[in-house]
Amino acid sequence: MPKLEPDQKRSAVVFPKNRKVLEQLGDNIKLACKRRGYTQVLISERTGLSRLTIRKIEHGDPKVSIGHYVAVLSVLGLTDDFARVANDDELGRKLQDIKLMSKKKGK
Image (cartoon, rainbow, N blue to C red; front, side, top):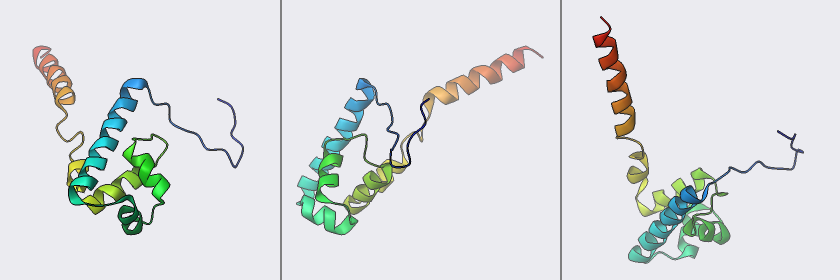
């Protein structure tokens, strides 16, 4: 991996499928703002983020910090939704159950 200069930032690699997820999140945030009658200016004032950053969030820009997304969700009263992400890890539980069952059979 090439060494970065002090003023360079590394950006995450976001695959097309995941980019669509971020775009959906942005659309959901935009709709939540519209439903509440919140403008980008209002969100900007309440979060301290620039209007450009708010616009990027509404478009699901992967370069925007997750903390900025959370700040906007907080203004919308939706941080509890964010906290539920990966809360019910169905795949993880199934993998754990398979491992536990194989140990039981090995006795």
